[in-house]
Image 1 (tube, one colour):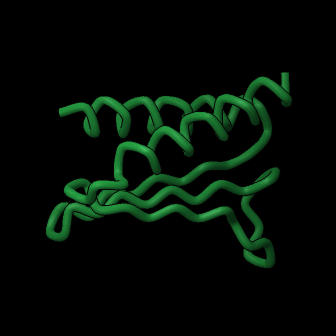
Image 2 (image 1 turned 120 degrees about the vertical axis):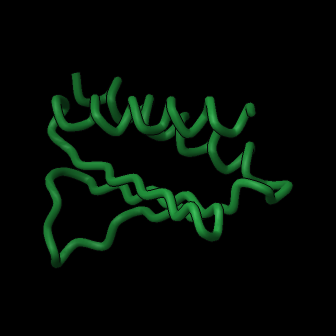
Length: 81
């Protein structure tokens, strides 16, 4: 259940990103237990390439990948006060 808590935190941070002027999209594909995060530097733009992280909830690396995303989002939010 730790991964679920981390996904909820990522989702919360993604919502906070909007207020700070940049976009973060999250997506959960239940049929394959995959979570995707796309982070844009600034507003979404079809010509921009986002930072993208994909991980499967059952993978050994899921917790560390989620932690990495959380750190990055917190840092971006802090920088864009």
